[in-house]
Every structure is written in structure tokens, then in C-alpha cells.
Amino acid sequence: MKRKDKENLKNMSSAELESHIRDLEKKLFQMKFKRVSAPLENPLEIRSIRREMSMVRTWLKEKETAKAKTEVTANG
Image 1 (spheres, one colour):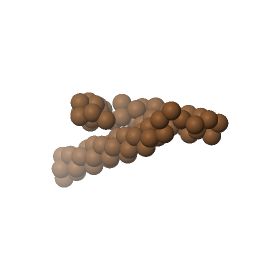
Image 2: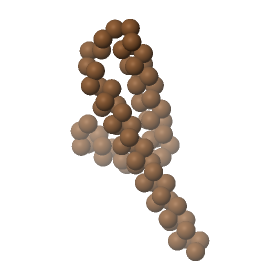
Image 3: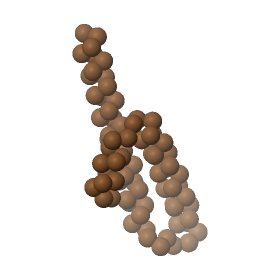
């Protein structure tokens, strides 16, 4: 994944990141399904999708914790 793509993803809102994860999950499922019936052109793409999903989940978690911290400091 290119640096620009990572920066664009990191700057997305939480809702956009969640929808992106859903899209990646669908794509991963389809690739795994196709792999059973015939060999894939690029089997390493499965790995890259899984890694991208983990990056997006990490950013989502960071946004949630940052949001929780700002709520705690604002309320307390």
C-alpha cells in the first residue's frame, strides 16, 4: 500500500473506515471462495488485504480511544 493511500485512509471518518473494512471483508471472502475452485492469479493479495484490514482496525481503535479521552477530559 502506498503512503498516499495510507494517509487518505487514516484521515477518513470512523463511519468511512468501517464501510471500508466491510468492503475488504467482502473482497477477502470472494478471494478465498475463488481459491477453493481454482488457483488465484496473485495469492499474495490475500495477505495484503488482511494487513490493510488490520491497519484500518488499528486506526479505528485509535480514534475511539482519542474520542473517549476527549470526553473524559471535557466531563471531568
